[in-house]
Length: 371
Image: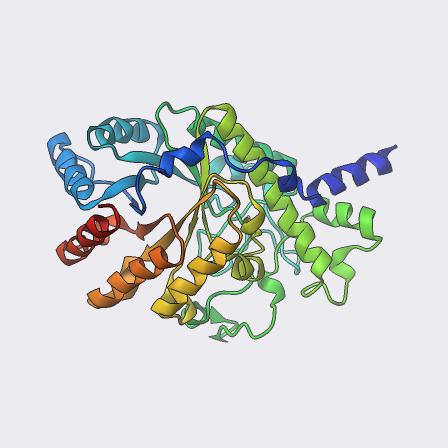
């Protein structure tokens, strides 16, 4: 009986739960009034309310309709009230698998993700010190994550709970990013999959996988490349996403996420199968410089994401403002590339980094696309 229950649980995580969901819902109509939307991660500087309102008015006048601030619940309520003056929607930017130094999680070391070397993300920090990822195979971690989502989803007037870090540790970094991190005394070169960054070997994952396939994945000779093992881990994230979407909808709000640039890259780089998710809104982080890309790459990534959009779902191309420097023509062309390849809009990271020249471009394109 125990073995049967284990197999059922494993198959639940392995099964394509997203296929059971209908496409489109009431949240689809939110983005139906305009042809193209402009939004940004971030918020006005805290302080004098009149100054915050002036900032929001400036942004709204240029075309901004949505903000995605990483803020606490009380600040989110305040921003919802302030943004309402200018019809700016507020989304709760919420970290999921990566919990940094969270004290509650620290008290539960069994919640953390484990790599192919047996190192726990509670103690080993891949790439940077704040990379402390939980495991989607830990029931305790899953319940903790869902609890956080529900707390955000209950906030009245919220546009969506915006999932971020809903993935594994980067198996592969973008080529340009690899140059920034040392590895064993030298330069990081991920021309092969390194066990240090191959996560998902939580004891529950290994046990469930063995129940189905008859082998502990840690013992597989091809574990880095094994397609079933890769998909099995991606499905664990996907099932958690679907549960969190249900929570959002139960509380009357939409669900969105910051995801990697396009589905195939996301699957390969961070084991994130977002092309199959039933989120209401997708915000792929199309940060060209991280991948040695150009404006053409922005259009390509947007188009690839759009190919996997279900009816009633919306995609907003994420643009990292700093990657364009003073090349304002290229900044403009990136927005145009997103529009021409089917995006519902663009999202700037970080909105506070836009200067007057950027704002003039945003305003011009908003007027062009939304006459």
